[in-house]
Image 1 (tube, one colour):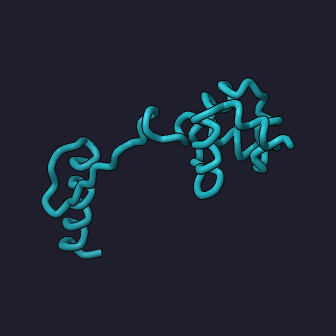
Image 2 (cartoon, rainbow, N blue to C red):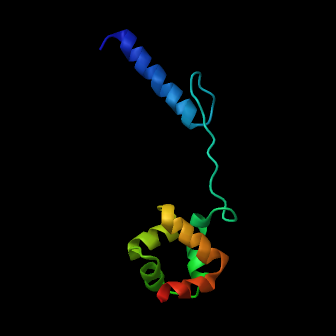
Image 3 (cartoon, one colour):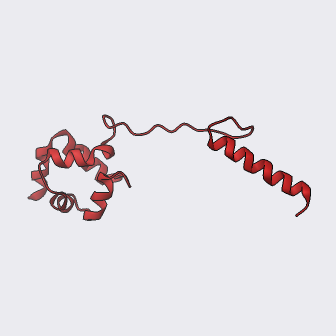
Length: 104
């Protein structure tokens, strides 16, 4: 490696350090991502939805047709429900008693 390439590498590492410290770096593009709010996003409240329905994790997972581990990941915010599961959670969130209808 010649001196010019080494200098460029050192400069890049210094810029990375500045960027990680939150300082402006020329050419870096920062995108602000909104985090889901508990009041507006169902996926943040999966545990609260289940608890409002007064049902255990294993029973709830079985009723909505997902693996128990999947439900636990949702509740611990490791993953987020999507598609039909999210729609179903919205329904149960609006009226926790609707979970009984799934048991039929």
